[in-house]
Amino acid sequence: MKYQTRTGKRKPKKLPIYFSEEEFNQVINLVKKPHHKLAFILGFHSGLRISEIVNLRKEDIDINSKRIFIRDAKGGKDRVVSLPKGFPQKYMKEIPMKFKNEKSGIRSLQIALKNYIRKAKLTKTNLHFHSLRHGFAVRWMEKKLPINQLQVLLGHEDLSTTGIYTKVSPVDALESYEELW
Image 1 (cartoon, helix red, strand yellow):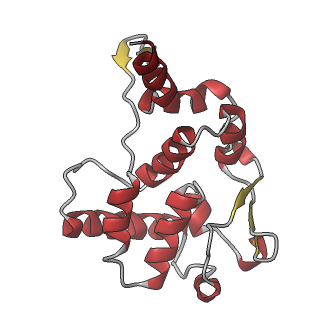
Image 2 (tube, rainbow, N blue to C red):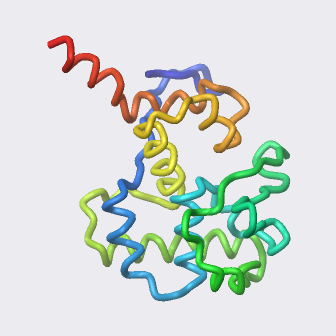
């Protein structure tokens, strides 16, 4: 796939690099700090962007309905996502996360995840924080969640943005091919 840059030159559009369930578990099992664990879980199991995690407030989480209300996300949009299954109440004391500002919080979480990836000795060395969100999307595509519902969960305005995950995980196409073979 190719797309135009502002200069008019075409460059390849890369497929998202994502955490598999196994890779995520390898990393999360090493995490000691509760706020790091919470951030990584929200990225991987709720599909939150790093800025949404850093800006999360207690009043944005409804434990009873198992929902997280994301305020003023990318593009100024609000959305609602599910709280991760089995979300421990103890993590509520970590919200809001204590960072000097959004920028320092984002950088701190990025560095922490890179360190845990290195400690886990994962073979994918190009994983980054947004790879957690990509892992969320790929898992739900593989579980056959309708793409328009995934679009809502991810907060994508354009369905073609969500459509990239059909190329990362072409489960249906492969299954159809194998059945026809």
